[in-house]
Image (tube, rainbow, N blue to C red; front, side):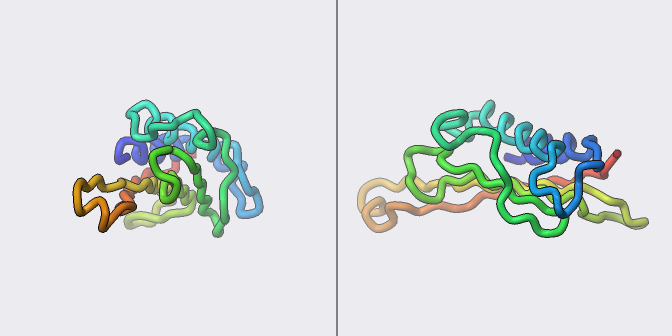
Length: 141
């Protein structure tokens, strides 16, 4: 996940900002970033159902908050009927450093389902932890 977030941030930092506005619900430049993150996770076999069922691209973002887009891809692990969403958040207006530099922050969140056996499985059948990785890169365009 860390590699996918870093790769997505690096790719996003090189994308043009000409289509980035708070009124653009799904900029082309961000669709390419989501595809880069998704393909990295699929290639690493983090997403068991990548490119099957509902775990496919393209996906439209959910709520847009200023210059932050949230993409949710569901059904990426058919072993679980709930809590199996991949969430990719791209903030094209993050700031960093001194002097202040405009950056892109990419955050990738995906659940890790604990596997308990015996009595623990009966007590905690759907236990999971949301794992999250973020990466920031200076915008170059």
